[in-house]
Length: 408
Image (cartoon, rainbow, N blue to C red):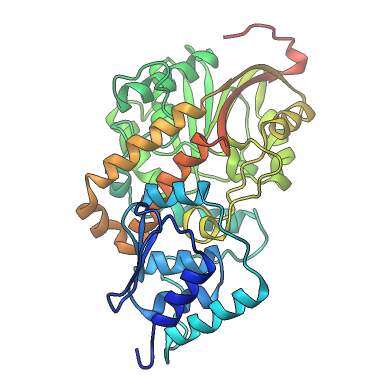
């Protein structure tokens, strides 16, 4: 780029952060080494990376530079660990101005870059039916084949229970599906609802347990198509239906309802409505199992703009206490609560490794931008469980009026 000079920026970074557990390499080959000799390396491949950071200072600008490929990292796990542990010195107004001026000089005469193509800016009312459907499509409609590259053979896109069977990802997912069916006491003649059914793994499990009718619902049409194919291949097309339906539009009554990996996308403003709708779909003796990610610390902020624009727009895990309150307000009685945070960390570790083993095919399916997002997302999500930012709980409920007292 004309007049683009990284040297002033390199000097200002060195002055502002005299202790640096990371290395920065610039597009002209110059380098700002880590002061400790270790840590991840950030490669600023062009002035466009600096322009992204100037256009949207903070997480979003750096995220755009990374997704576009203008900012590269040699060790994603190392970067995540750095963000958790490094306490940079405070940057006063004068230092911030000097860094900004140096960044402008480094950028040179270049037009502000457009956001990466894979960025989604949510529009419309948050958690409206239309906006929720767009958010789901953004996350899931990468292609069904893309998910086959890292999920187990059952295509279960939720926490596997390694604490019950750690012999393989497939075995741990089977353990989760079986335990969920056992908690719901699914048996012959039952009508079962699977909210957020994914590619049909639990719907098929319910049919295997003898359920007479199973309805699985999702907001992704490509996901629903493959789920129907999987149901038919398992021989349950006469008993299992897969539909593209919003949970707010469900009708009928069911003996067992599983909501797996869906409640975290309902939103704090809709959690009471969600609980009321689900409770209203239960038969008097029916059971609900709510399986979802929650935030743990009440002092932690919500997900930042990178996740909002690139990973899962409008995802809003609420605290377990808020989920339980909503279920109680809806007339449900909590029978059993179980936590699986360590299991999800291990699940994500398996998924990240499997995706890395299929990078060439994954890139051809999703494109380089989306693949960068997914490689970072799987590791950052795992880290969230490891550091106690998030966890995941199964909550088993029945209608309070039923007077159920049994526990799994």
